[in-house]
View: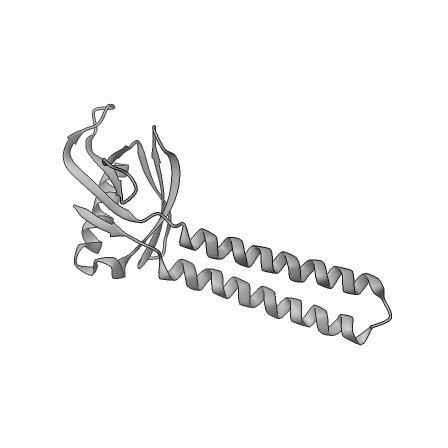
Length: 151
């Protein structure tokens, strides 16, 4: 079973919603500061809040742009070190060869999106979002492979 992994639209929407909520809260705070214009601590706090929000926004966009892209492969015929059947491979566009994964853990299952924590001995831990819309025909195969690899 082979499943494509790309930048997750759900993750982008989630980050945008968080940014919007924080901007609304900041705007409410700023309107309170403007009503009490004689208090200098309000302006410094407001400026710090706006700068923090902008820094978070830049980091959020960078995080989404750096999302791992590649292919997640389940090989049910391989034998693992602990004697279990099946093994996961991660093939990214930046790696020359597939990376054997020591663990694929389902962290959050939202039925149409799954947040996975994948680990390998060589590259350490990565977080990837897998979406149903990437390959609807193979979505149930991926979900079955995730369940069978936990067994």
